[in-house]
Length: 256
Ligand code: PGA
Image (cartoon, rainbow, N blue to C red; front, top):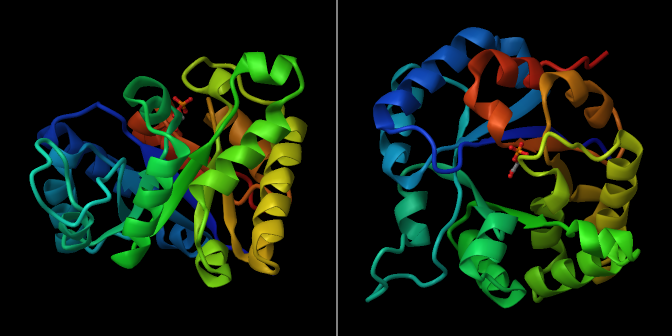
């Protein structure tokens, strides 16, 4: 089965809405129609920038997908500071990152919470990008495969075969995020293949469809090797996504 590549820029807590508009415009100069035919591209600005970014994308008919970095799982109500899935759907958000390791580690999100968020995103016809990843300590004692399997079984519990086959999982080893240290392409491939096996084991047939991104210090210089691996269907890019030229080069990895 041929899966469409998805390269996503996670801007984290960077750029106000003026800067966000500038970055989208600069990015649009780096990429041509041909790039968007080969690779789907999504940008994930902070909540306060989404409306501005979406307006520019619509007005200039740019081919980027609009994404978010987080969402609350409830429909509405007294949840001070939270953003509901429907609010994102109304802004044409297509992809929502859920369970990023920074949310899990700094804000205490559990697999159960991530699972509720994934379901809320699906309910509003957006696609969750469900993140998983092990710490260096877990890898050192050879528990990385078991940790990823437990995270996936918890975060994706109760989804149908169709839902599982249509979602995106980002495998992001925590020791590689923002550190400049990337997993070797072979290690990344091995873990992404593991993710696919686990998803397929959860619902037969879903493994073929699920798109698996690698994330963790992806840069123009390593994108080619990572993205040429059979089970790596794209990248979730943090730091390097803030530079239009560099992000453009990642999207344009050697597709020959
Ligand atoms: P990084 O972040 O590319 O800066 O390592 C990736 C991520 O956290 O999604």
